[in-house]
Length: 176
Image (cartoon, rainbow, N blue to C red; front, side, top):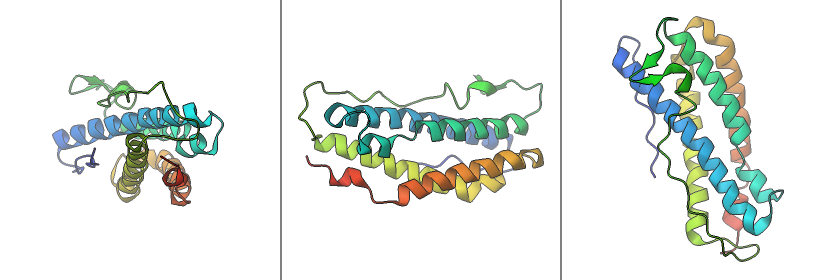
């Protein structure tokens, strides 16, 4: 999977704005599910409380970030608009997905993962990093003036996640 950032937002282009929010909502939901699948892959050979599972567990951070982006989205549309292209505004960040569940293997070696699993996890970390970079660069361009608190909180959450991602990638050290 190659990361394709959400369409560029243009203030005067409603269709572009709708596409932007739907793409961003889908990406955020997919990343949250992807984090879960990566953790599931690693918990079988290493255990749920292992440092590897903790390293790829971004579910809570992504949930918090999705909530803040949902606030910005809700404030970006009139109160009487409830849908964006047949998707409820309240579901853009929560039921808008294109990710396919990763097939978990049930026979595994202790303390080892397959090359495909490792690649899948490394792609998740890379795509998450790219998405966070995109949000950092574009967060100030989305939403209304009433969204400044949500925007600041989202930026703090993004910086926290970027800080975690900047540390040594321990997944690349896992034996195949």
